[in-house]
Image (tube, rainbow, N blue to C red):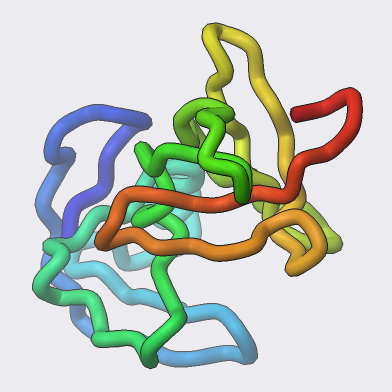
Length: 132
């Protein structure tokens, strides 16, 4: 895997020594990062892996990174903008949609997200009075 700062490509390559699951988290031991101080030095960096290393998900499921760049449209087919980011929030994830330079924030809940189709490059959102 690679550790990167933001959009840095591709980052520094690190060998994975072990992985242990703890609840909904994965604890990853990297070769050469052998103590807490060394681990803290890489805190906040992005973890990158090859797409081919991702598990195949069940039908109707997707990885959050697959949402970036999707065209956001309404059920009527009107373009809202392009998904720029997915924010992790306590209650639910939030899509950040770039609408001509302005951010539109849409919670990732079934009332607001009608469908997500990464292969088609589209996420369909509910029209929200005053927001979309």
